[in-house]
Each structure stands twice: as structure tokens, then as C-alpha cells.
Length: 221
Image 1: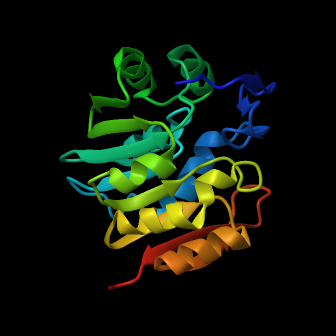
Image 2: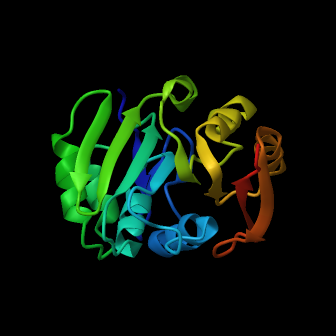
């Protein structure tokens, strides 16, 4: 599995050289994760023991840490992510250093020790597995169904593979009844693909300088 080539902003935000896109909004990654992925999925209000979050684009692990920071228990969440270009633990640590998140060190340690094409580990409050490789090939064969999705690939104009209609259909097939998604993008092609897959899609106020984001719920069969 190839490691991504990175550059870094003055604020300590990693930028993918492959996609020429930052992993999160410069200097505001945690606030962005809370606004887009937590609030966009009506979390933490819906969280409960066994609640399952799916994600496209594990990146630095910041979304997972934001989720765990919001989860008070009791019980344990499930978190399944798909990542084609996994960061080395040392780069993950550098990216997360700007955020005072209590489980960051535990995540970095677990990430450094995990091996294989599916990295499985437990953190306080969650069982985590990250599938390494192209989500277009991996997601259709996954046996789980998520209650909420964090769709966090690089920008659709730069990383169109992670927003293809067939992949959005796979997301819908692996969503529990009444499940939701949220994403920072409001690109028309993405919204249409999610609608065609069976989600009720709405535009919501975006984070920071982004006017809009997208969120939605899977329609009843």
C-alpha cells in the first residue's frame, strides 16, 4: 500500500500532493468535523451502544476522534472506514498535534501497531476497522451496514473516483434503514448520485467559507 506524498501548511495541516487538496480546513479541522460529520448526521443525539459509523476516507483519523470525543457511553460504537492511501503513524501524529483530543495518542499507537489489509483495533468507546484499498472494490463486498456515513474523500473535482454513482449506490446498500450521510461537498453530481441511490438529500450551511454542504437520510424501501 503506497504512502501519500504530503506538503504541510504553516498551521500544520497536511495537503495531499496527489490530489492537491488539504485533509481538512486549514487551522479548523476539528470544528469542521463537528459541523459537517457530527451535526450533519444529527450526532451525538443518535449515538447509542452498537451505533455503526461508516466512512470513506480515513485520512488523519480526525473524524473518528471527534466522534469519540462526543460519545459519552455507556457501551461501544462501531467505526468502519475505507482508505486507499493510509498515512504513516508519524504523519498522523504530526497532523493531530494541533488538536487537544484525549484519544489521539491511543489512536496513533494503535495505528502504528495494526497490520494487514484491514486494520482492526479497539479504542475506549469504539471498535474500529479500517479497510485499506480502493473503496470501489472493497465496499461492495463488505458485510456491514452503517447507521451514519462520513463521506470525506478529497474534493470531487480532484478525486472523482470516490464519488462515482456506483460507489454511492454501494453506500446506500450498506446503510441501515433510516440511516444518514453527511459530506462537506454540495457538488451537483454528488447530490444527484446520492439521490439516485435512494437518499433524501438536502443542502445545509457549510463550514467556514463553504456556503453549502450535503446531508441526507435513506428513504424507506
